[in-house]
Amino acid sequence: MKNFPTKEYLELLDSDLVTDETRRVLQERLNAEETPSRFFDERDFEILKAVCETLAPSRTVPGWF
Image 1 (cartoon, helix red, strand yellow):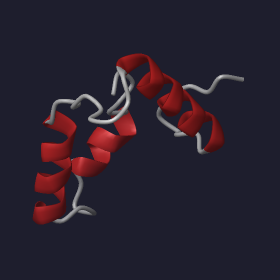
Image 2: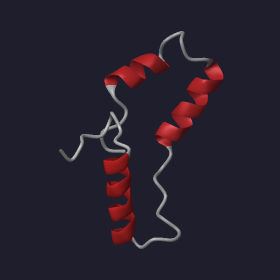
Image 3: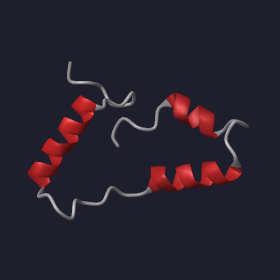
Image 4: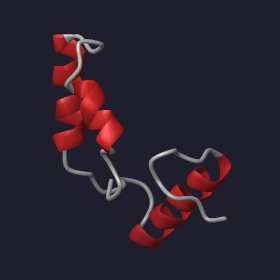
């Protein structure tokens, strides 16, 4: 996740609004390496990710339009 985490995300993790257990799990996910697709080849997986981002855009990743 190139554009992640955002400043706001990190501030939230450091706040009292997040429990210790939630903070631990989110930190693990944030530090985890991205695993390659087991089904799609690299090209098709990139296309799938682009389609998903177009249909359900993320606030942390700049949009296409």
